[in-house]
Length: 88
Image (cartoon, one colour):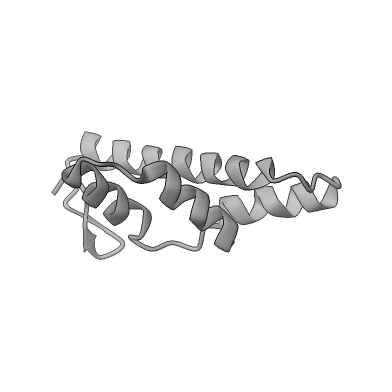
């Protein structure tokens, strides 16, 4: 998972401080990261050992995180997992 975390950090880095801060907050808000783990598990089971598997696992995590953020915005939620949401 360290490789996936490295991809996530690299893809979310920004020269714009606010974007960098929000991206860091959203991704490090908690969770078990089961989806990226499943991607890596299936990649291993299918013999796919190329570095792209880490990119793919990160993409799955980005999609999941985006759906959570969208849900928080639509529902005007102020908390997720007991912490303030990014839009709060």
